[in-house]
Length: 121
Image 1 (spheres, rainbow, N blue to C red):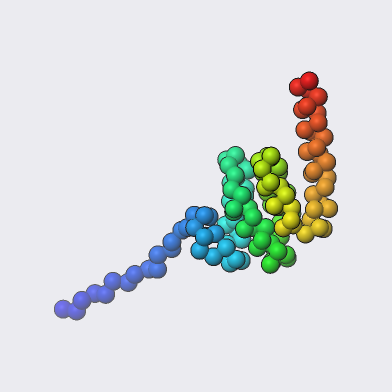
Image 2: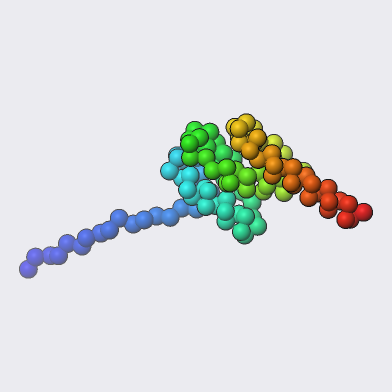
């Protein structure tokens, strides 16, 4: 009459993005989670400056993993938070070569906002 031993599978614990940032904001393993969170912010019309700044800081340490498309989305979300200084905070964390690449986006946004002002007047 031997006792059967229960085999326990290691439980996969899922953390929220805020918890991941609080526990270890400089862990490059959370890059995919943060990138997915940026896409979620775009689709759900939410915004988290802390998560976005954390991702941009991680990109500084892992430049080969940087996604220009994700950076552009972060910048657009930061622009939408105006007059808060979010855009400037994000811009200081982005390499100049990426800012140059995103200039076309900025010009389009400037043109679009100018058109909206003309329509309102």
